[in-house]
Length: 294
Image (cartoon, rainbow, N blue to C red; front, side):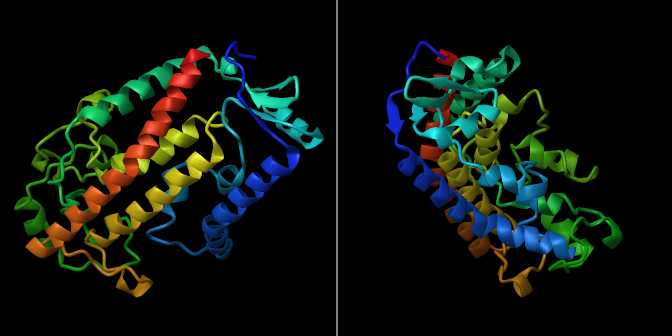
């Protein structure tokens, strides 16, 4: 175990209650998804949270306490099936010293990325045009969610994109732009330049707090992963409402970013999500620091 001893002891009844509460919270999200999947139904908004973010529903439901917590009682021995856990005086705990060197390098990279984002000014001028750039100059068969109608014909979508401006800072959105749309973006982000461009006003950067949280599992407290998922889910709804797709039949009225009023509404959501992301980002930075301390 790490030289930095665990500081919190949880009686068996206490941590079992926390685990049950976490599972109940998460099943409200995972059960509907799994029901749809069993029926072969696709959801253009929520499926993304389980396909693009490759963290299985069963993993999201799984509870972990995070570092510096000792779980008491015989039931805690079940955690020993994960190599990151150790038996110590008083129970079982996850051991940051079990973090292998390659993962330690990733944690250092992530810590630097998140701390840079904390100080970099947020940008709120993209207005969600990334989703429009992903269907720009495509035929109907090429459109990703082609089971759902677009709000405008292709030529009008092209006009909206071309009069932009398109100012996407997020590589993992930019890489899905159509080939004709990429030169229209004022930046050409790459995987290696992510630390230079990532900023906390970006909806996708705040959605990715969920990705960073689960990539640190099983060291991440499950409640932090769930908090990040909740934010990502709310952001995804706004992301698709501001897209060129007409999803009103699913209960997602459009945010008409092609209008001044719609752009103002989108920016209000951006600012609110950025505020919600701040404490989550700080918790992830603190977790990274703890893991790097060993």
